Amino acid sequence: MLVAGIGNIFLGDDGFGVETARRLREETMPPGVEVQDTGVRGVHLAYQLLDGYAGLVLVDAVPGDDPPGTLRVIEPGPDPAGGPVAVVDGHRMTPDAVLGLLDTLAEGTGEAGPSRVLVVGCVPETVEEGMGLSRPVAAAVPEAVLLVRELVDDLIADLLPHPEAGAAAGGPT
Image (tube, rainbow, N blue to C red):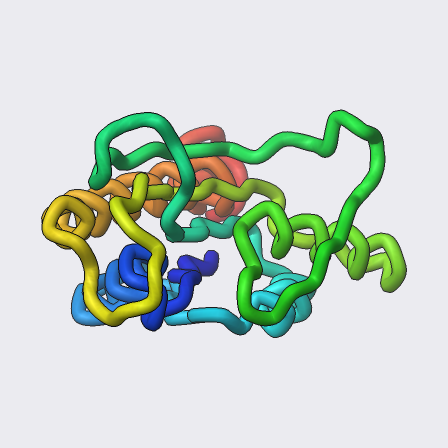
């Protein structure tokens, strides 16, 4: 399971994912859960996801009409146009661009990406040049940390085998 904070710390609130990942790295995560600050290395992330992760939680600033600091959980679905679209810009790798590139890479290599992907997004106040999060987005980071932990627990329950379930059913443990 991978939790990846993405974004550019030099563009204000676009650093939300990076800051949330930094805070998550200070926490004790369940075994098998890796937290990383991906930053603007979305191309690297897409290749890394071919290594057999069961689940992925991306954390990033996402556009929206809600007030700045509003958190959303998005579960990306298949591209309605029917095919992967990989628009690669090393400085602006949004979650959909990373997932589009992953689909393209998986198609070309025969490898599969994560079974389930969730995006924890935060509506930014500003993504203009400058370091530091705005007040409402900074205030959303602790809530995002809790939300990511809940989602990770849910993904573990949904995606990973449970030895105690096999024992209860009379199967191997």
